[in-house]
Image (cartoon, rainbow, N blue to C red; front, side, top):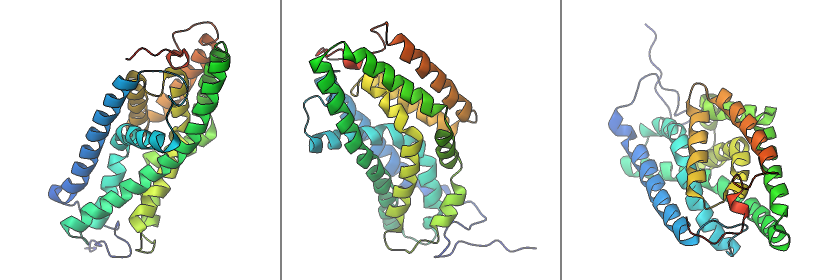
Length: 269
């Protein structure tokens, strides 16, 4: 009978048996706690700030802190299976405290990739906010362009490539196992996060017309990301969302309801 190959220090994911549930509890608990706390913080800030265009008067450092909380709330539920899969590889070679530290490193690297995208998002929001303030009617064209960009990307080949990676990351995780141990978990999280940004950045663009602090929109986008990555019909759902965004791009030119984030309203949600 062929012997089961156990994971080694150099290749921690080469395992042939399932790990006990207690070995994965640390990873699940960390992700759940961070995601819940991030949602609590995000909802609290959204209620206080309301929905308005642009950067809502925030400087870049404060915006990035809020953006980081938003990304933790929206993205961690969908990345949890990948983080736990990686935790399986490190569980047999690490103690409980070390597992917690290494899982935290993975999540930190993942969120670092989204924080870098937050700098780009801040620039885009600052530009759109200035345009809407100068000419409120420009909001229609900005909203239509944002929906159209998201729709075209959802239907394009780059989305499909990045989504395949996010849905089936095992081959990539096996390659990560050959990385040098120094900061390996941080680098793994950062690399996987970069693919996730490539998969989902266009879905964040629709928050420009819908409202960056619109809790309903954030929850809807988070649910869409979760289903795209984990549902067996996720790729079909991604394309259906692309078609829906293209329809919204046309409607935004004639209707106000698809553009709550570009109306300049100061009314709290």
